[in-house]
Amino acid sequence: MHKKIIVSLALDHGISAEALAMARHLRGEDGEIIAVHVYETPPGMANAYLPEDAVKNAFQTAKTKLEEKVAEAGDVDAIILQGHPGRAIVDYATEIDADCIIMGSHKPGLSDYFLGSTSSRVVRHAPCSVYVMR
Image 1 (cartoon, rainbow, N blue to C red):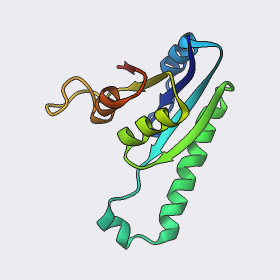
Image 2 (image 1 turned 60 degrees about the vertical axis):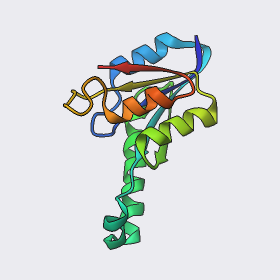
Image 3 (image 1 turned 90 degrees about the horizontal axis):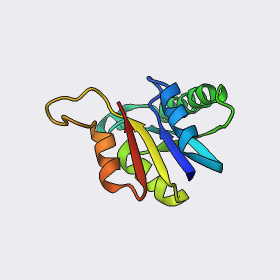
Image 4 (image 1 turned 135 degrees about the vertical axis):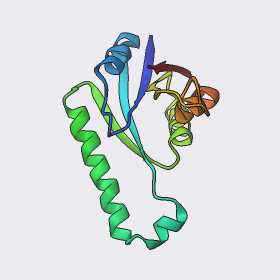
């Protein structure tokens, strides 16, 4: 059983009941579940033309949405990270010494037939087990 489980989620999809059920199944008696969303700042060129307040407000809005989605599941903590999603999830898992990461994969395209690019990166670089849900 795992002590620290990260459930990665995108705010436009929310946290799925299946991912939470899997996390609860894999969690040890005194384990914790951490819902993580990665806020990706606009690319350099676009960011240069945005007012600083707009970026801060967008980050705060994402944080509030994450907390609202997780509030319904009383046994889940919410963390919002900034940066590239694949890299940020791996770095955070390393930082907190996570035992498992649960994440979804999108419907495949030609360039990433089996996994999405974020889940593919996490699977290759994570310091722990990764469970990819379809």
